[in-house]
Image (cartoon, rainbow, N blue to C red; front, side, top):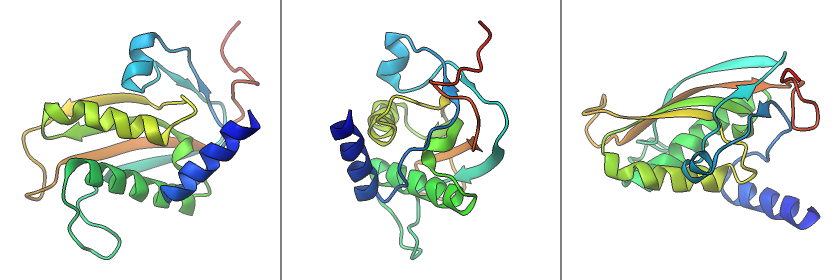
Length: 162
């Protein structure tokens, strides 16, 4: 277990993301849900709720255009993590997300990146929607969502009815 935690902390540091925090209770997932990297539901009780505006990965921190679906996906998650850090949390506090992509062929690529970033298997509840256009040419995805920071539910402190 210690090796896993050290590896997870190293992976999140390399990705430029904050390490996972213990928050929320992620409901049991079917094999299909694990394959697609989402939870059927996430239970919270208390905590600070952060309502995230849609984040894209079209431009990096310096305003330079980011090219390619996977690069834009990573940048969008990096942007979300930065917003959540300002609120005292991290990407690990995401409880739900709505993802818009412009090409259904990129769905599997998106899922692969999400699996990489949520290695503990605590995936946000999620919807993946294909759209025809975005606000700017070259933009390939947008992610909006909700995060809960300092929630009292967890795997070890279940808030689900018995």
